[in-house]
Amino acid sequence: MVDVLIAQYVAGSLPEPARVLVESHLEMRPESMSFVSDLEGLAGAALELAEPAAVTSRDRSLEAIFASAPPSMPDVFTLPSRSDSGFPKALREYVGTDRKTVPWKTLLPGLKEHVIFRRNGAEATLLWARAGRALPNHTHEGLELTLVLEGAFHDHRGRFVPGDISVADESLDHRPVADDDAPCLCLSVLFAPLKYTGSRTRFIGDLIGF
Image 1 (cartoon, rainbow, N blue to C red):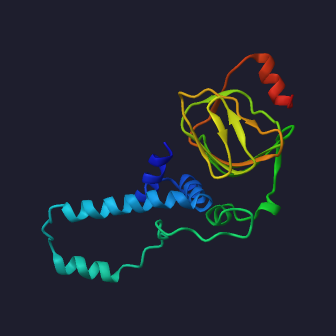
Image 2 (tube, rainbow, N blue to C red):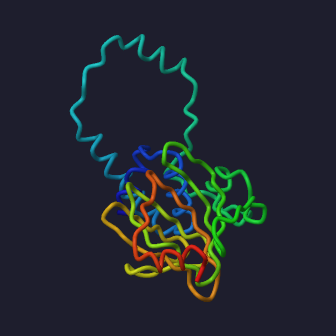
Image 3 (cartoon, rainbow, N blue to C red):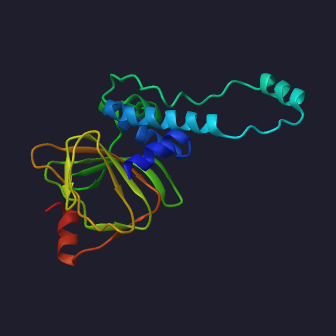
């Protein structure tokens, strides 16, 4: 699934919060840039093999191209330069603050959030969980992307460490738990609300942080 996300990033088809998440992953995991380069090569080869198409109104088309403003999109195939703010550069620019000055709000005991964007059930959020803190068991009504920035968390699929992306959808029901030795900081991008599951006793315990 992460490869699919990177392919969509290269194609320029990701919405902004997901683009920022993938670009931050690429900064934290430079080895992933080799896959980006491979995709760029495949795209170039496909263009070379494509049948040429006749251009109508050639002069008008060229005139419009030369009169247009240069594109504002960054070169997605260039590895971002490392930010000294504690966040990857793309995330620092998107959030508008650095790691030390995030305006956190307490969501639950031992769990803080900073909402970057929220509209119509979709949101991008920074989440901080104290060591050992569990999130309530939940499934998803749409796609959820989570990039680990600091610390680590685990669920029944395994352990996610800095630079890892967790991809969750309607087929996944899980209970993420921060590692016991350090807090966990993540960027979460949701495209639909969560749906809480599990037993009532565990749900109440997770809400209050026990």
